[in-house]
Image 1 (cartoon, rainbow, N blue to C red):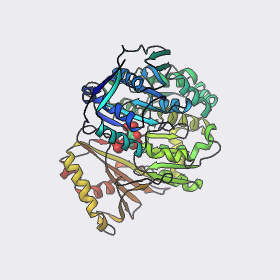
Image 2: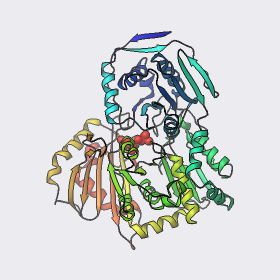
Image 3: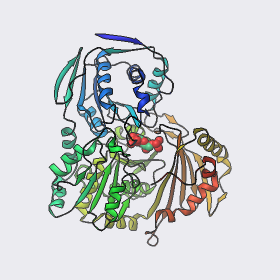
Image 4: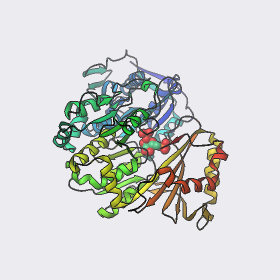
Length: 542
Ligand code: G16
């Protein structure tokens, strides 16, 4: 039976950089999730007769939310919902499944790298038929629907047993429960030289993959250990937990500190990697050497021809504007276009669909290609393994060779988290108001070449997105970007992105924070971040 429940719009159901993210308790408020899900259905023109993919990263409230969404999809007349066992799917696996099954879209339950649990964060994201995050016009339509919603519809039925593959019926909707790992692992086998990677492990190559108690554990075990022969125990923290073991499932040197300690120590294996809550981010680290996401993207682009799935060459590449310009240098040498988009994977979708880019990536630890329409943590790890196998070099040797050839873009991001939102907004808007006067002025040791408020015109659909971050270029081959995060759930987070290029062959081995000291000082001189936000230092430096 379908029940119709009267409701009223709830403020703030506006999807951010990646779906709607809020404190878990907010999502648990009666009607909160239901309002947003109904707004998705309304915003996309209904669900009647459609096929939907559903899954999440297993965080606290995933299981209950999946049952509610199944009942609401049934009430909306969905023909079929394909759901991962126990309501689980990594974000890349969900993207692949939408494409492989020709589904009309998918709902992914995740707040990505944000901590989970009753006091943590939860999130809901809608992906469209190409497998990618809903682009701006769709998220806008969903937001508008959330401001107009007056009722939601839900089937009254007991919870479905999602614990094993099979099919079930919910009202008129068929629910297909699938193994979340198999299809995705098969896709990886089509892209990479599994024989060469297997030979690497047979030859004694050792790695540590830290799944951070999140969704990639089962995927990494199957692919790295079972299919590629990495020794048992190469994948650690491999059982997804609702609270990620109390950790912060963000694969960077700060949050993946156990892995970093191992990789910087005497017992380090040849290769270290980690991924995030929902499996779309990655971290790559060699013995004694952390690889920044921007460098990783550039190395992958420069070496993609060594990997079977990309042997035909790259059509183009894309990066988010704040990501370092290391990629641009590779693209320049390959003679292909390098697109700079606003932050948010949703902006890559059109470029990938139109064949304007094969590889995309972001400084925020996301890398991916046109094999799906999301960033893909394990894919990036396999890319590296394939490149290492083909080049027969260590991570450090690959990096040194890369910097010798292209120069090094020293890069870091300083985050001021959960600061007062009014103060952060004022800082950015005051700076915006001064942009016109900055060119030609000096900030400490650096001279401003140009200053802009980044806006993006999508080359495929012509849509324009404004105010996507303040970008300041210096005459000394340096760059500074400031923007407010769109994924936080408390206060505001100011991100300060710092970059400086050194052509080499000298000066390629500096400590990044030291190499960036003048850019860090310029940021402070420009807008007195620490004074205005009442902080003495950034909370996270990556
Ligand atoms: C999401 C988006 C990414 C973005 C990142 C950080 O990643 O998909 O495109 O770079 O957030 O965004 P912000 O700087 O606005 O916090 P994820 O892994 O959280 O889905």
